[in-house]
Image (cartoon, rainbow, N blue to C red; front, side):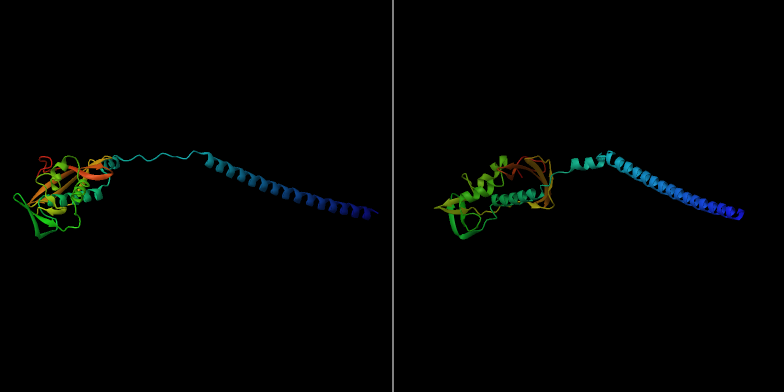
Length: 235
């Protein structure tokens, strides 16, 4: 009897130990799961807060200030009118050559005499009438400089004259034109004007030509020039 009672006590103790063991494992696992969940939640919250701070934190929009050197360089830089300047210089050279009694294709065999001047028939495809000559000049020249070159198509000493509707030219070269020796420099740029400075071969010597260009009828034209700072439109 005592043996049976002892056996029952041992069995009961084993059953309780088993249940206790099971209870301990469940508690450990639960604790581990809780700690894992808490850690994951904490990490997620921290990442969310960091993302929120990153999104809400104002970004710097300050534009770097120009250095004094960059500002000075910009103030000294002019708008690019190099193509306009080149076109003006080419046209002025051609017009000045023509005003010097050269640069026009003619037929020396077909001449007309007037006073003491001899005119040859124009064969140059650029000019068939006095209006062609006038347009050639006024498309490139304006202002006070026009007073220098309108002698090509009007006045008693005009280089071009029409005889019986046919155009003739006073072909008597005296040496004019500009043989440029370097690239032009553009300065004093505004919305409707700029200045061209370039050196040229002035009958063996070097001279500086300064041309004032202005915008007229949506075209860039030469309005005046000076040579070595001398009298306006004279050379």
